[in-house]
Every structure is written in structure tokens, then in C-alpha cells.
Image (cartoon, rainbow, N blue to C red; front, side, top):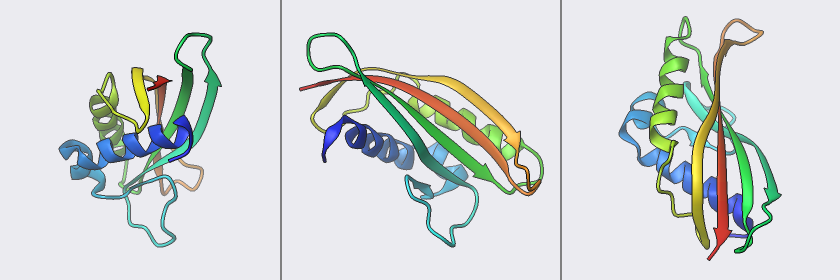
Length: 133
């Protein structure tokens, strides 16, 4: 896998898919590219930002934005997805390929109704710092 961005996303997706609480809510529907005819709820890895960290070891700070998407009436399911993702990933001991994870934190959660009033979104933002092995 090329680059720390791809390695971190792969490790995050693998951790989410293996987590019983996340799986109970979204099943295996955890992607960085959703299927056209995907069922709901689902969890998507979207925006990915990265910048070098001035430190030994080739450090990179990354911010990943995950979006839980629900069609459940009300925000209960979206809030449950956000809580499960936070519990699964906050300070999780991930092992991205070729990297050492220095830190991983959930730094932001927002749950809101979509403009179509049919979907509710849970936006979860992760901040990670990694170094090359």
C-alpha cells in the first residue's frame, strides 16, 4: 500500500469491520467507496487530510472524516453509530502497514438530519499521528 494515508484508512476500516458493536449497527457496510445499491445504515470513510509533522521518524498528522448514514426515523441510530465508532477507535492500538501509530483520537462528532429529511448523518473526525517504521 502506498503512503501513510492508504495504510491508515485500511487499518481503520479493518478495525471497524472487526468491532462487534459497529458490526451490529452497520454490518459489513464500512467503505471508502460506497456501493451504488448499498443498504442502510452504512459507514463511509470520506475526507482525508494529511500534513508532515516536524519530528524525527517522518511523522504525518492525518485527519479522517467518517460519515455514518442512517434512514432510521429520528437520530437514534446515527447517534449509536457515532458512539460505537468513538468507542472502537479512540486511542485504539492500530497497526497500519509500514507505520507506527503515535496517537489516534476522535476529535469531533456531529449528528444531523440531511436536507432530504430521509437520512440522518453522524460525522466523526479522527486525528492520527503516524511515523514510518
